[in-house]
Image (cartoon, rainbow, N blue to C red; front, side):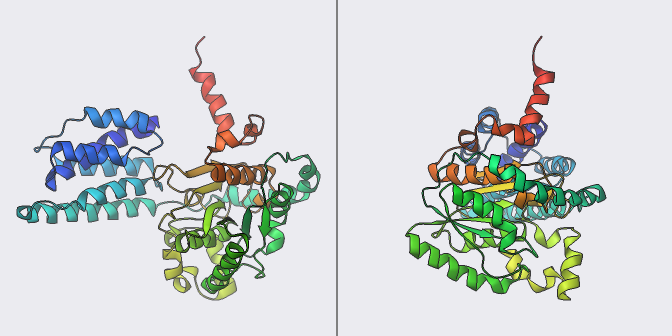
Length: 387
């Protein structure tokens, strides 16, 4: 958060000044910002900053705009910017007095330019480095070792018969999710397979998926949780966006959940080889459905050593809503279906979201050593602890 504090300080002043320009009073502009940041994960730090902020009509909106974009550019591409964009758009949408038409037009132009600048920054996510691509070979070890590791994985979560639909990755079939399904079934979840052969990430799967979702929903009389790995997570998110009344939550595993139209990945070369036409050309409308954030709990598992999909595309905006979580795991992209930490975190996230708990509350302390965040905090304590 420390590296982003200057961004939020500058952004709130820019957004507040934009409110003044659009005809709001300083008080109304600050109240709108306070309401927008109430659910932010770092609200305790941000709300006092907004409350102390003094807004004036003579603020240089152009400087604040450029400074906000400069900081975003230096911090690099991030899905979190969708929260900033949402706030700017909400301020621009406020209806001002009839005599403020000129100001409204200026505000609309600033909002549109802000949207474009953020889009330009988020197009700069590089494809996975060659080293990560070479590391994908370790997936052979991960899949071979899971047979020995599986009996030792704790089985403490109780699924209580809750329905879970699992969707395999691109070029994968139901065998790809066999260990995840086996583990969730052993905990008492009622798991359902994809049953459509190899997943080629085509839009024509959607009607059959909708039918399957409807059947499971009718059978259980309750909402269905969806777990999607890689390309399977694309379908999980689209199902949640289309049918939030039937989807309990989604959990994506190394899935590109935003910005896929600009995503740089070696996978595209494979797609074009098999299908003769690029994914972007064939599924433009289909991929556009990925951009909205569904109104259901979202948990995104990702690995920074992913050799196939840029990991930043696999994270949803935690600052957008409190029930959106990103969790880093160790492992290769191709081996996540046979990764013990993925199996446990999938079960923990399913249960946590069903009970309204935090992920930490659903995860034991001993399990946390399997995740990078645990070691990152340990390392930080070495430098921050007092002698």
